[in-house]
Length: 367
Ligand code: OSB
Ligand code: MG
Image (cartoon, rainbow, N blue to C red; front, top):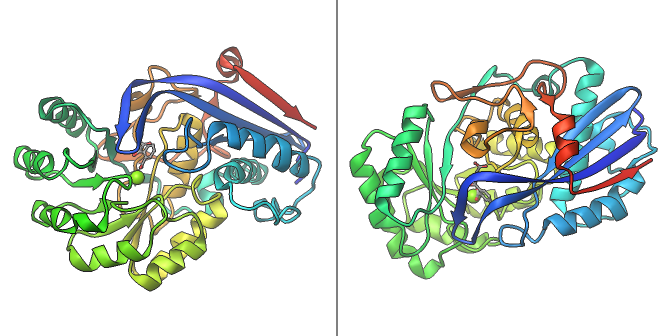
């Protein structure tokens, strides 16, 4: 499969509402889209780096830099047997998993189209629909939170994830549990706590949460293992897991019982699948996280979530949860707690290139 040409674009896309997490917030997303072309085929992907380094050290700017100055010039023009080979000529590029993932995931889309199969099928997906949940940002009042949660339950989401931080945690979640006794809830702290908060975090054990996501430092393993020994609620790692090696370390130490796999965070689908396989072999569950993607990134996430080990609902919500108008059609929808996995070739949705072109604020082409 020859990669003859690449196009990198940035488009602004405004979330319907401000999304706040303990480490920051955003409403105006800067979305970086990559298109690879070759042999009459194309492949699309979205780079999930954020505007600022509050979730990961990677940002829109670092990703643009690594993609345009290092990765794309060395990938365009190559003839590769498959997506696993895309970085075989540049093993010396360290880190920058989100930038790398954009290239790798577009290659997977292209390879799936070359085979005339869906991306889900190409990755080894086994499910035609995947269980999905929704991630709720930190809200200024309990009333606003309860209203939004009630709306999402009515929309049919299979579980609701609540962002927490010190001051908006145990009492807030206890109120939700009381108001919605049967809902599957989990909490995501985005590293807002330290091991010194263990007593406080143990209070969550009474609330029947599915898990607490990334309570401690964004790069920690040892303290998460200590915390997991002290609380009953399963710890799920997000930020800490960037590689297969991180997963092995977390399993060895007992740092978590669940992992949220975001293909962008872990450097692409090959790494996502290896983490999935390692967790499955250990008898532990994974689920697919989200980074407030447009329909392009969402299509990749849905395909990944169709693999057999993704047994818990993902942060894969309907297009209309995020955008007035998505950039793919049909838009992604949720019914009865599930999202259908597209069956057409590659990502299986039509990318609205005209609209993207009209929105583009920055563009670079290679080859
Ligand atoms: O921690 O999972 C997270 C969004 C941006 C950065 C980090 C996270 C999130 C979410 C949103 O929780 C999930 C989604 O895309 O709906
Ligand atoms: Mg998270």
